[in-house]
Figure 1 (cartoon, rainbow, N blue to C red):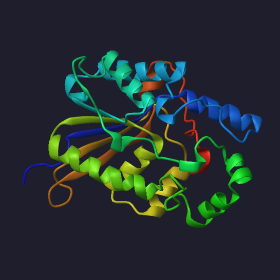
Figure 2 (figure 1 turned 135 degrees about the horizontal axis):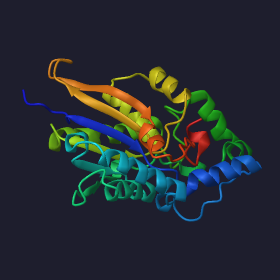
Figure 3 (figure 1 turned 180 degrees about the horizontal axis):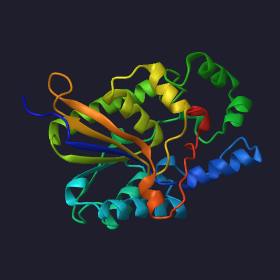
Figure 4 (figure 1 turned 90 degrees about the horizontal axis):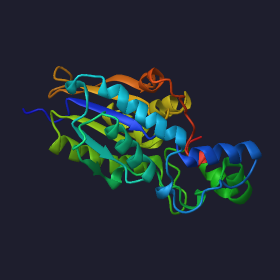
Length: 254
């Protein structure tokens, strides 16, 4: 049977965003709301986030061509697209390599929790705070938003597309913290407890690498095998500060 997975798959969380910075400021000040204007989809990278994306690209540029992606797919959110473009501009991929935008990689949608800190949710929407405590983040779906299960559903479709069109290729995905974790859940056939334990151990760092290699000996038809998770060495190698700020809605991810 023909190989159905990419030869290499990298998952990259976007660089530090202005939303990450605003969330930290709101938390430190004990505010109910995060000072972000406009839509979450339009939140850009911070200056440090742009440095991180450039550092990641320069690190990959120093590697042989067969160690760099030849397919780039990104969330449509501005911070993810900016990360992908800066990565490519720094030599992480060929400059004429298109960036495929796929809305299934978008950030988890927070619905009525959007823009609130954990404190704000407890103060303004105590019923939702209680529902989430009972159900857990994996199953809790705030009104107008998504649970982790909802994100996983759309990502299963995304991986079907990747396996159909990019088998044997070297694919890099630029997305968001919950997306990286949910993709791990699917690829590694995890259960709820396992992925939430990984999540509880620490945030996915901005511009960190999670990497899979295809192993033809795994399973009946071969499978992707985790090579490294949440590695920040490329950013550190360029002497750029590493950040692992939670996404703006901290209550949605704990």
